[in-house]
Length: 328
Image (tube, rainbow, N blue to C red; front, side, top):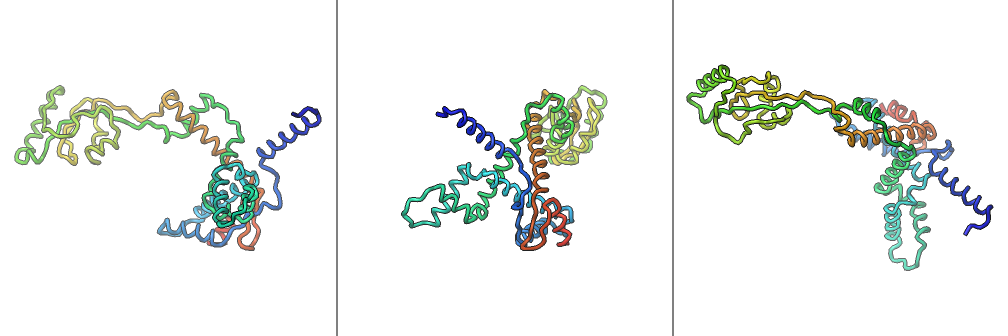
């Protein structure tokens, strides 16, 4: 037990220092140098060339290099934070790799020493699974630095308005249709369609049977994509433009001919917060985490420098533009 007040004081101080070390970004230091190889950059460039039939723009290449560099920065920051020393997946993988290398050795080995040896040999750098895991843990650490709290209703409403594509409820139509099969009515189809049109115009409540089929007689609530799926593009395009409560036609579909009556229409709208509260809450939190990560990367880009195989040392913040200008 910690009976001495002085010992307690030093213990508390050590704990505070440890937490501070874990949660701070840190000041720039001379060892914050990212070394990249020509092969890494050439692979990235070739990937962009393979994705297109034309030469990628400078902006596209800069974004690609920036994304690759950000992963490297997060990896190095993760190593400095020591995230790899607390993750069972990383520890287990590196120890197994070391056991494979030292196969046949019967001496008992201290696992901590074996792990340190694996890191000294650069096994973490050579293993893509370990690298990805370190980057992932660093992101989680960074995103956890900001205490987000619970957003207000006003914040969530603003988030919905700023992201309409994620929440917009698209237009929907409810309609009835009378179907005529051209394969069954080859001789008198034109006459039958004309007669049916007259009947429907004279009596809005009339509803001839038409021909039987597997098609739904009515669709109470369907968006344009669903209508296209059942009846084809041209049919859907005409149906969504029809007036309400009036039989219209004949309209051709991929199946044959139809008379259609629009019975309801729900225009596209942004939902009320109560309708999508959980989605908005999760989306808002994810957006705040992304912002935290972007702010963190902006800070550490100013702290790091980049060098490609003994070439010029360039500030990480301007390296993507520097490399693209030299390559192009």
